[in-house]
Amino acid sequence: MAVTDSSGKSKSVDNLMPKPMSKLGVVLLVLGTNIFTLLFSGQFSNLHTLTSQSSVTIPQHTQFSAPVTDLLAKLNRTEKELVDLKSELKSDRDLSQKLLARVAQLYEYLNTTLVQGAEGNGDRETDQDDPWLQWAGANHGSLPAELRAFIDAEKLPLGYNPNIGSDTIYPPIGHACALLKDDLARYMDYKPGTPCPDDEVLAQKLMLRGCEPLPRRRCLPRSTPNYKEPFPFPKCMWTTPPNSSVVWTAYTCKDYACLIDRKNQPGFDDCKDCFDLQHREKTRWLHPGGDLDYSIAEVLALKKGTIRIGLDIGGGTATFAVRMRERNVTIVTTSMNFNGPFNNFIASRGFVPLYITVTQRLPFFDNTLDIVHSMHVLSNWIPTQLLEFILYDIYRILRPGGVFWLDHFFCIEHQLDTYVPMIEKLGYNKLKWSVGRKLDRGAELKEMYISALLEKPLKRH
Image (cartoon, rainbow, N blue to C red; front, side, top):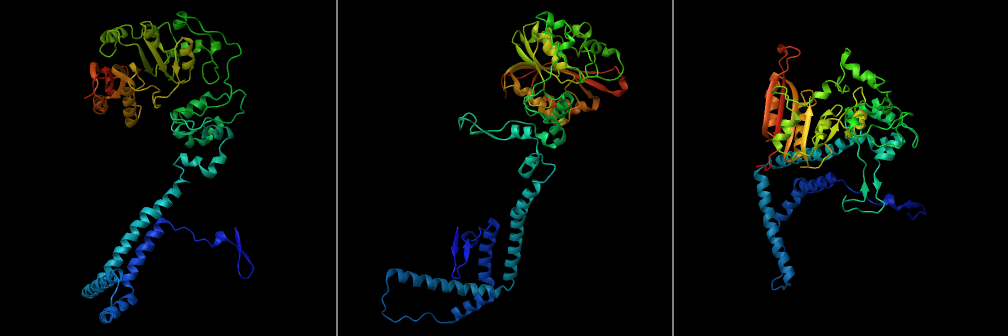
C-alpha cells in the first residue's frame, strides 16, 4: 500500500512501519533504560536540585479531592526515597562501577544464550554432519525427483485423522540416507512405471550403512523370464529350488550348484554351507551337542507346549524355522543377501523372509512373541552400545514367559566381563546358561561362546 507525502511523492507504507525488535533487543532496551536513569549525571543533578529545594508551597486551608491528596502523599514518600538513595550513592562511590559490571555480565549471558544460540541454529543448516538439514531449504530442490516425491509430507485426502493425530503424513526413511546422497541418488534414478535398475548390491549397501528403511520406488522389480512355480509342501522344505527363482547378477555364484559347493572353496562367505540341505543343515538342532549346543526338542520341553510363534534373527536359509514348523511352531526369519540369494531361498522353502539388518528396530509389537532365537549373528562385531539396544528390543517383543535362545554368542575371554553383566541386567530367568571355549582356531586365541536359554519373567519387579 502507498501514500502520498506533501511533495506529491508516493511512499510505501511498509517502509514507514517500525521493524519488530528481537527478544534480546527488548531485554537490553528495558535494562539500559533503567540503568541509564540511575547513572546519568544529569539525572543526579536533577535529584540534587529536587532534594535541596523545600517542598512545594501550598496555601493553607486549601481543600483537595481524595485522589489529589493521595498523589501528594505519594510524592512526599518518593521525595524521601530519593533523598535516601542520594545518601547511599554518596556513601558508596563504587556502586556505579558495580552496576556496570553486573550489566556487562548480564549482557554476556544474554549474548551467549540468545545471539549465539540463534547463530548456532543458522550454522547447523549448513552443517554437513546433520543429515536432515541437508534435505531442507535450498538443498531440497537438488534431490532426485522421485526421492522428493516420496519424502515430501502429504496431506491426507480425508483431512485430520485422530489415529495419526494430524492431517499430514510423512513417509519413513532411514536417518543415514541423507549422509549417503550420491548412492541414494543413484538408487532413486529411474523412470516411474518401468523395470527397476539392477541394483541389489547398491540397495543392500545403503541398508547396511544405516539407510533403512529405504525409500519406496515406483518401478517394477526384475525377475527371470523362465520363472517356475515353487515346490509344494512338504517337499519344498528340504528340496533345492530351481535356479529360475533367482536373478543372479548380484552374486558370485550363478546357480545353486555353485552355492552348494561353496563350502569346499577357499575364502570366506557368510554361512558357506547353508545352501547344502542334505548334509550339515539336515542335522542342525536335532540333538544336543555338548554344553553349548541345545536341541529344539529340549527347549520346547522346558516350556511345555506354550511356544507357538517366534523370530529367528540372522537365520541363514531358515533351517531353524523349518525344524520348528515340524513341531507346529511358526518362525519368521530375518536374513540379508550376503553374496547369495538367502531371502529367495527362504521363500522357496515355504517360509517368511524378513529382509532387515540387525540394527533395525524389530517390527513386532511389545510382549507378543513366544521365542526369539539368534545363532552367531549377535556377537562382539556389533558396537557395545548398539548391541545393548538390540538386546532390549528383543526383550521388548517377547511376551512374559517368552524365551530368548542366545545360540553361540561369540566374544574374546576378557569381553565376558562386559557381555555377561549386559545380558544379566535385563532380568531374565536362566533356564540354561553355558559358557565354553571355541577351540577350532586354537586355545591361545581365547575365543569364547555363550549359549543361553533366557525366560522373560511373568512379573517384573
